[in-house]
Length: 382
Ligand code: FES
Ligand SMILES: [Fe+2]
Image 1 (cartoon, rainbow, N blue to C red):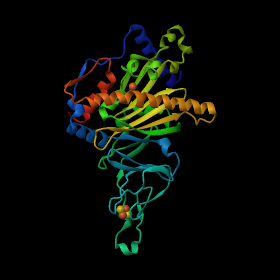
Image 2: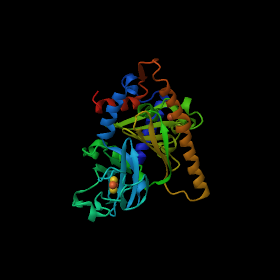
Image 3: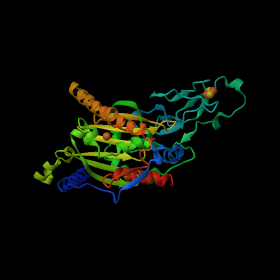
Image 4: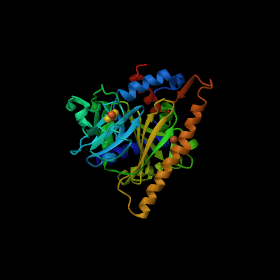
């Protein structure tokens, strides 16, 4: 049995047993979380600094910069990034700010380009961050351009993502940080998927938003006509890899497996598998050769989030039917987040200062959020 099949069969077995017994994977106890942790700007600011700046975070998909000499420029929290792939395929990330007087070097966007003319006075940098030309250098004065480089950030490409530390003083051991989760991600082979569409969404504050991505207890109420149509609510198989998490939900046809010989199982048709990269990446809904990847960052004022939502297909859809399938999947993913999850999360946010609650509760049946909050607390040393 292939490694991938064994993994899916094992997960399906766990979910089938849970469903037959009316049980689910559980945490040891109920977690009580202070609402202050969601509302106090000092706490949030310090957590964001420690978690999003001092640890590697996924900032882009390898598939976005497929070709050599391609780039992407966009802003993460309050740091403008220039991500480049050089002529040898090596990926680097720089802060997209010129060494002359602080203007953005490259306008936000993506494409193929290996040299970047600063948007203010036209100093030119290559895709390794080196300054290669000063406009009218004969009049500028005596300066050694070899010593001038864009500020480079820790950057590594792994498991289909480009990872960066937003704090330039940090150089991280990414393999150690992954805790084996990279080999789980490698099974998806994300770098070879085709990006059908990507959109940017405005969402609620970071932790309210991310709680939603980790929730297996709300499908019946919030998603009755979308994802909840197929998944059984409150039926979770949950595994952790350091801060990262893999969880699976049972589909409504899971009990059919009890009637089929295990060697004839097609477990991928009975479970839904989600990989959650700490603190802000989700790969979900892999079904019929489509998948949804979301990368979420706080906005600079920390009062909201910006989500980049990618719809990927295993292969580029070419026929009318394949394109329609991809469109339908994109619409389902959009609706579940934009029409269902985020409006619920915004309502929580709108009334979070109402003094109704000093505490929120995470039940034993909510081990995924519990694990997330434990790691948030651990890394921000609360
Ligand atoms: S600020 Fe970039 S060239 Fe002047
Ligand atoms: Fe949801």
